[in-house]
Length: 432
Image 1: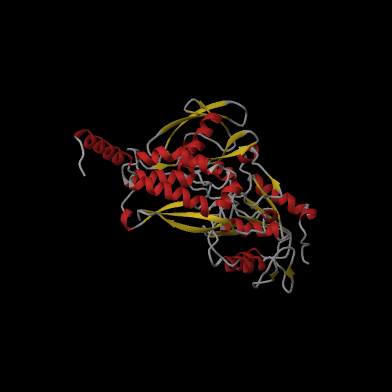
Image 2: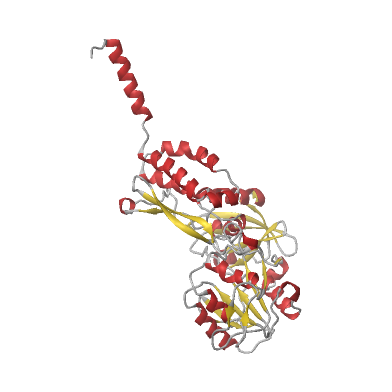
């Protein structure tokens, strides 16, 4: 074929333009991920009511600009964050085992020695220790500002920052995270907080961030003289009622209930506390069987038979919060759904309980681990747990004055409920 110089020049320009438009491996992965997730997660996307096409449009420029595997990791992580799926994560393959999250020159983030909670329209200090305590901060104080920024503005911005790269199944899970993990700052940071104390006086305190934990442990005030370990703690409250805090749902949980119930002995009422439960895996039927009297069955929802040497058949109040995740939600939720107990909490649980799948990307650089449908589809009137959580019979927020006095509001409310049990909402009758 004979071509003129002008034609050859035009062909060269077209070739250059074609090269300029060629997609990078990262952009191809991104487009594949958008399509694959849109198909695999369609039911949950519809349930959670967000615009997946708008998500793709928002992040396409970042996908096109990705110039390294680390950039690719960040874009994919931001994509999964917009799925509102607490289990979602980008998983490395052998090709990317050494790829780490960009540090941007910052030191490791650590805690300041306090956690917050909601009290009406206010944010208050839920618990305090280490650096915050030595700086003079006290539980129950209202938080007014951070480094001069009004707390409402600061907190909204902090949640938005967290949600850009962390996937939360629900708003309550994101809020809870911001009150705990979200308070972390680079080690050595000095942050000025303004508070209102228990008498209404304004106080400013500067806290230096060091190695204080950012992981919520559950109760604002843990009852005294409990036995057990970090997974399960148990004992009797001053009132004589029994108390069990289940921090993790390991596979031996039914047997741990045998241990706890034997140690607690005969009590008129029992508080089962699932706050900050990180999940796990266990036999739900065997677990619930520990709360069905010997020789009896529970049949208000699922069918449960009595199990274990010391099953408890009395009045029961369950406490939850948005720190209760995954198996912590199915474990606490059966008490409400199946008619065994009255459930209270400062909010619904995290709403991250689902069946998952893994999506492999064409490049083989990463895999995407995501939820595809809810666990416990019979919960919440057939809507399941994912994106909703266990919704308590009653929302009970912390009382700042009680926190300042060293009283855990939810435990106190649970004991009041045991004294005058709300039998209307609970089909089970104690001892029957």
